Amino acid sequence: MTLAAATNEHLASISNTLIYSSMAVYTLAFFAYIAEWLFGSRSKVARTAAALTAAAAGERKPAAPAVTVQRAGGTAVLERPQVVVRSASGARDVPDGPGAHGGDEQGDLYGRIAISLTALAFLVELGGVVARAASVERAPWGNMYEFNITFSTVAVGVYLALLALKKNVRWLGLFLITTVLLDLGLAVTVLYTASDQLVPALHSYWLYIHVSTAIFCGAVFYVGAVATILYLFKDSYENKLQTGGKPGTFASSVLERLPASASLDKFAYRVNAAVFPLWTFTIIAGAIWAGDAWGRYWNWDPKETWSFITWIAYACYLHARATAGWKGRKAAYLALLAFGCWLFNYYGVNIFVSGKHSYAGV
Image (cartoon, rainbow, N blue to C red; front, side, top):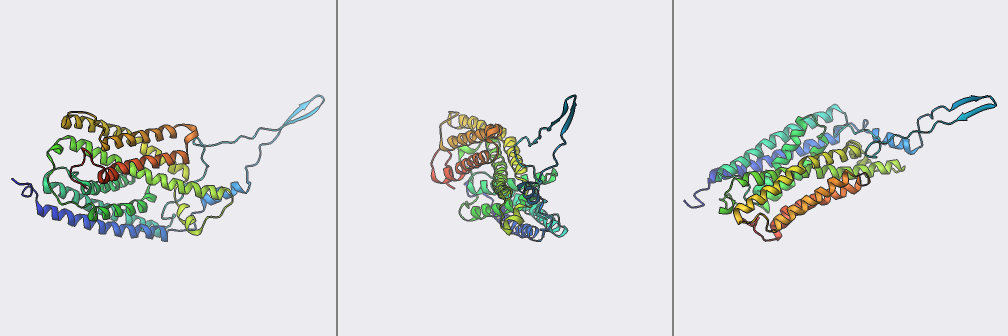
């Protein structure tokens, strides 16, 4: 049987149609998220500004009363020492924003519509991934096009799973869907590859184990990177308010609704820390597969090398984040550097570098 005959062109066509359909629904979700931000109440988003401008103006809690001690020769007055309480992370004690909807019923309605559309688009895109796999009866991870559509599906799935777990991550929706649309646009134009069979080296059960975990790790790392970028913006916003500056109206309207910088920092750290052991397993699984396919567990192939560099970068971030002197912005820059290594490992190595992992071009 030829490779062409082994491909079900009808299912491949259905897969393409579903991917394009999911992009259309994601676009509707994008506009619904925009509406959530635009129509959410701006009158209920001044808690951070109020907290920080009050502190900048010198407002303090009343000092503790002095202690008076009676003595035989007179009266001694002892001042109570002022107690300054700080959070464990050293961050400002400011409240989280009310979210994209701004605590407004109309904004909340648009947000719920956006989430419903996101869930629908996720199911449609998942159908496209499954149809792609069925068209060649294999895992849909044989080239960068298939990796991209699976990656974006998993990233949205992670977001929806966090919502299902009652986590306050609705603020992530607009930023997530924007980049998912960019990712799918890149996939269906620059990276598109016709459905076909795999080269013999990839016919292994390790394909399901190694590549699936790599995709999941990348999706979770991506969510952590988005939270880290938003943390940097929110931290700069809080710094400006604390020093008496006046951010622009647009910045205030958007950044005021996000969680506090300390909350974003903590969220990013927990997400990256949770998936890091799985990334370690991904590299180990790849080494075992390499031993089966090539006779050596480690060949210093570009893909292997950059996977290891990414592992080192995230290990440094987690270590730095757990060290008192590297909390906040320093650790955030390191987290973005680590995610940049992951992106280069996928896009840069696959497009610009040749190695043992170069099977189907893009």
